[in-house]
Image 1 (tube, helix red, strand yellow):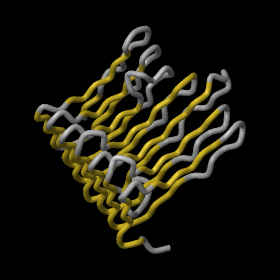
Image 2 (cartoon, one colour):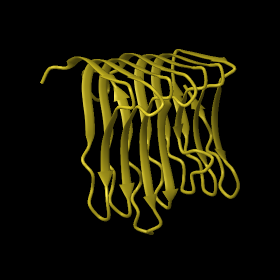
Image 3 (cartoon, rainbow, N blue to C red):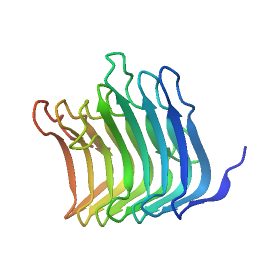
Length: 212
């Protein structure tokens, strides 16, 4: 079908997909020319508890803007040795796989695109494909956090220009396991008090970042 013109989430709005026990959750897919999200409790979230797999999140957009603490997140919670890797999170253009959005703008502390895991299952993969990607004022793209007990996921950024400023970062992290790899392919990469990092707090190691 055709894309919606505007998809707007604010005022603590949420779109959720959740897996419990061994069942798999359904995928979350949004196709819209413009996606705007604002507010600290505004979220698109896919989560899995136990051995089921959370649904992948796919955003087909022309423009996306997250501000005021809004998030797009995936989470896996399981101590079972059969736990699956977390769901993937992809932002891309309206033409689907291989296409780029025009712009992705993340602004403000707490705003971001995040995958996390508590337990054994690896944090999910994150891929963002856009002509311009701008992170500012503490916004993040991160696959795993310093409290992630499982391995951090990989982050893939495909863009014409990437701008990371004012305390923002693109990263893969873990606390007691290996971090994933951060791969950025861009014609222009600008860091102004921003950072790109892969790190493990204690027992694991950080993968090399790849800049193309």
